[in-house]
Image 1 (cartoon, rainbow, N blue to C red):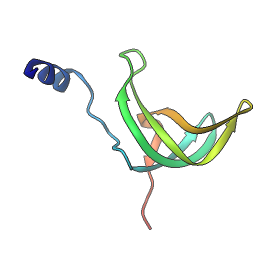
Image 2: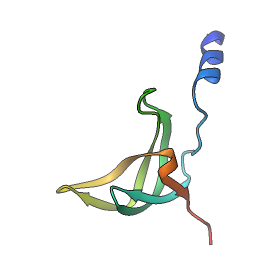
Image 3: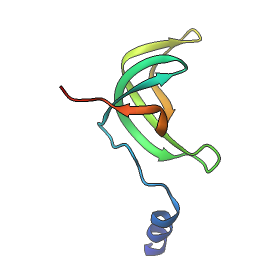
Image 4: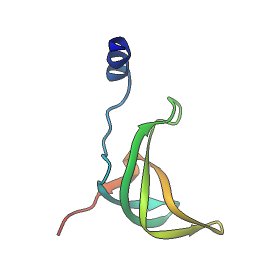
Length: 81
């Protein structure tokens, strides 16, 4: 079991975002604000992805989304006031 931990620590990207982080950004040119639910690696080709729970749902292609999947670099930390 120890060898698996060493392998993943050495060969997987470290998370940039943690559960509960408040973020904002644009998804398909739609601005959003939300909370990070998950930051993980999908595949080597796709790279790291972040799942965000939106504060307000967005409608995209006749479908209402409450959760979206974005790249790590497409979101920024929401400043606290």
